[in-house]
Image (tube, helix red, strand yellow):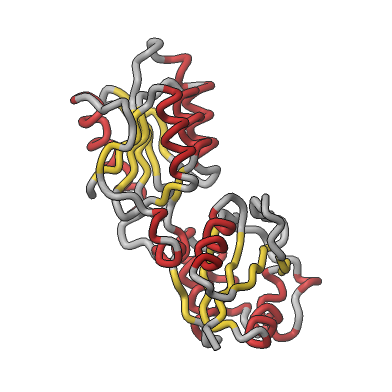
Length: 275
C-alpha cells in the first residue's frame, strides 16, 4: 500500500496544484482545509475542514486514514484561538502552540511543524511534491530587464535579506534605487496596491521599478515557500513597475503559462534571478 499524503490547505491555487501533481503520480491523498481559508477548488476536489482549536482530532483523523506524509499548501493568517472550541486533547498542545503564536511567522510555522512531526508525520514541501513549480533561472518573458532594473533588483534583494533577519516580509519594491515599499503582514497584494494607489502619486509617471520576491534567510521552506501568480503580474503592472523578479529555487510560480502570458500582455519582464 502506498503512503498517503495529507494536503493541509489554505487560500489560493497551490493546494489544487499539489493535488493535481499527486494525482498524476498515482499517489493517494486527502485534503484538509483550515476553516476560514478556502482554497481555490475549480475541480470540486473532496475537502475536509478542520479548526486549529481541534488540531489533535485532525491528527487522529489522519492516522485513521493511513496518512504518513503532510504537505502544507496555501496562504493562512494567524488568528486568536477560541477557548470554547478547544478539545481536551488539543488543550495538552497549548503550551507549544500559544508561545509560538506570539512570535514571528517563522517561529510559528516551526512550532506547527514540530507538532506534526512529533505525532509521527513526515513533512514534504509543496515544491518537492510539484517540482515544476520552481522555474529554472532566466528571463521568461519577451520583455527584458535593463541595467537600471538589474541595479534595482540587487537593491531589493539586499532589502529583503534585511527584512528576513527580522522575520518580516519576503518582498520589496525598488525604483531608481529607492525603496517604495516592503512586504509586511498584509502581504504582497496589499503592498503592490499601496504602490499603485499611494506611492504612484508621488513619483513621475513611467518611472518604473521592480518588485522582488525571495524567501527569508534560513526560512523553513517546507511550509512557507513564497509564490507568485498571474494576479501578481497584473498588480505589478497597475503599480507602474517594469517587471517582477523572483529568486531562483526560492519562489514558486503558480499557473506558469498564464503568469508568463499575463506578463507579456502587460509588457512586463519576469526574471528568475540566481540568488
